[in-house]
Image 1 (spheres, rainbow, N blue to C red):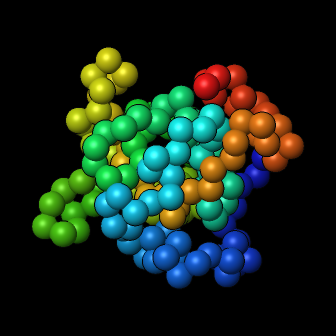
Image 2 (cartoon, one colour):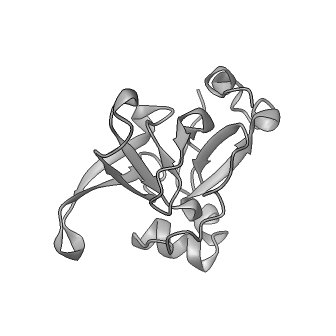
Length: 148
């Protein structure tokens, strides 16, 4: 099992947008994220810690303007916290080891897949293509990625 941590080096390598979103709980503009239209097979990992978060097999087009997933790849890697900012109550999603702000989870997802919609900022993620997963240390998750 890999050790996933937040490091000063990883934080220093973030772009200003990635820093604002992951470290200051920011949000990218709807429709602007680089992974919104990504349909390649693979996994999405925390840009800070590298911990695996979501599989492409759980990604779907929700129409909300951000990449959406029905479930985490490893539930222990996704922390859910009460968020009362902006005059509303929501559930914030953060990476458990990297403590990166990822986005929010809502209960309006596909009912036949559990009913959840993990609405995630692309800037919080790094995509690892299925063909690279083994070489990058994520081989144990290949079976959870669909063939496209």
